[in-house]
Amino acid sequence: GNSVTQMEGPVTLSEEAFLTINCTYTATGYPSLFWYVQYPGEGLQLLLKATKADDKGSNKGFEATYRKETTSFHLEKGSVQVSDSAVYFCALTKGGSEKLVFGKGTKLTVNP
Amino acid sequence: DTAVSQTPKYLVTQMGNDKSIKCEQNLGHDTMYWYKQDSKKFLKIMFSYNNKELIINETVPNRFSPKSPDKAHLNLHINSLELGDSAVYFCASSRYRAGTEQFFGPGTRLTVL
Image 1: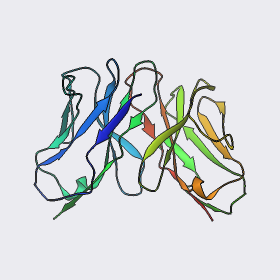
Image 2: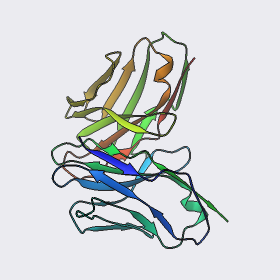
Image 3: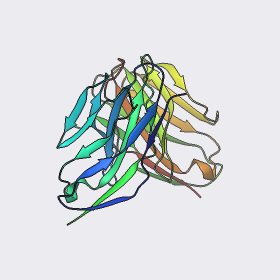
């Protein structure tokens, strides 16, 4: 079946550090890929998405590129801020089904 | 304006009770979902409705029964609550098209004592 694997957390960084959160997926065909973010005490918000191979999603300084050859969708940000502290979820949907399949989430803490 | 709202935000109840969680969206979407987030933050879909019809029903105990009176509402009723039902339940909505964004509600934290 379809699945998403993302790096285990928690991740703790200092402000202005470089962030990478790894995400790989298993799916037949061409899934759509997402990063969602959950700030403390809130629901999930879409951070970025990519719907086909080699697409790059970007938002708020975060980027991720859909790599079909490595089945990956790693999240990166060049300079994190304290306000980026949250739990980040990689997810996919497979064509025809709108079921989001989530990774286990990675908690990021950014210290001033 | 709140896009996806849930009530209540917190729900504390005893084992064996029956409870409901309500969800409403004002985005004009035709598809709604219920997800369960466990204590380790793992999220898993439970149900999905499209135009008031059930389209996704994961392996969920039949004590859980979703009801969609119209496209804007999807309620979750839980019978005979068990300790393992304690979790945060999220409602979400989207347009029914591959790759579209799902909009999530703020969640309902259910605690079963």
